[in-house]
Image 1 (spheres, one colour):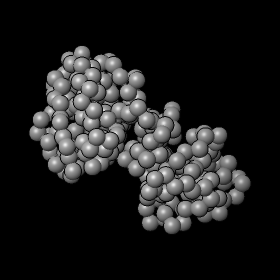
Image 2: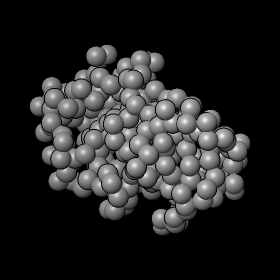
Image 3: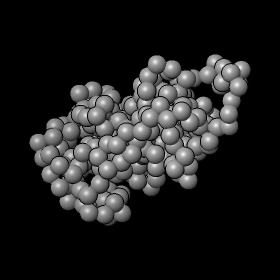
Length: 228
């Protein structure tokens, strides 16, 4: 691994920060507790970069007013700025769709219950490699056909419930319509799109989507080609 010695510990719960710090210490890194609060993501990133070489960050940072943004956005911003960062959460299934907007810039999403010093070391290695351009097969994207089954409102966001036949024709995946970009007004039940998707992902939480295109009317034969 590249020269990582100091790992920023980011959590709105002080007790959980202490627990995370112990895992980081056991992994032979120096934990740097970042107390907050933060209102602007730029200030957050500059603080982390000035004090640490990497980070481990909880997703729900707003509960105790630690930050005005979620951990998914924080980790994605660190990634963009070349800082290896792990996102952890206790709410993976609940927040899965809402995290999707930033998932392409989050190499590792880890359930809090799966934390260990070994997993932290492994996760940081994955982050370092991806930032340097070495992407795991499960993170590589392929042009893929998908079908919109319907729309759902979650909080103040509109989500598209989609099926990706080439990944799993029997499991729905929720995607914020903002990821469709200029095509978001065309998202409706029954519509088909192409997108770049990491179809090697094992779990739906690890899927991410880029570069949506509206699919033309497809014949049965062509549909079969795209899902086989």
